[in-house]
Image (tube, rainbow, N blue to C red; front, side, top):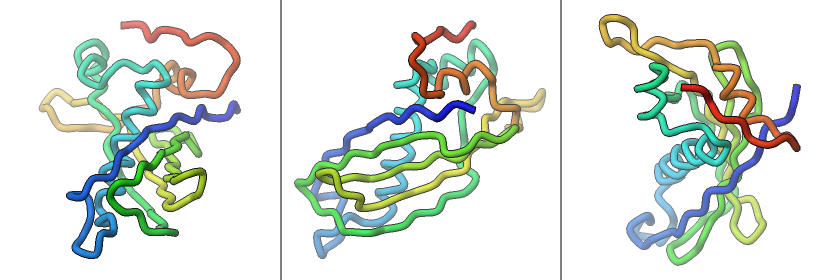
Length: 150
């Protein structure tokens, strides 16, 4: 099995992201990791979810579980980078690892378990197998990117 690509999503921390003590309010890390998840797929060459829903019925990758470990505080005026990769692929689920870095130092680490979903005939979301072509785009490789067919 090939390793996952690692992408970087940069966040400028604003005053409004912090609590009265000037420390980033912890739910913001989840919000930023969610944005990093989407950024990961886009940087790997996966079309936006709205396009995949129209062309293939793939609605997105909702979150099933999250584990976050905070190591250092972050405050406004700082810039953080979120390094994201796929830590494990399963039949219908995958685990995404987010390493939140400041000046090369780990400040927070999060793991998200997500699934790919589509809609059934009634419009209800249902899980689906991880698409092979999307998994291939997310693998670390020296080969050129391939396009996902419509």
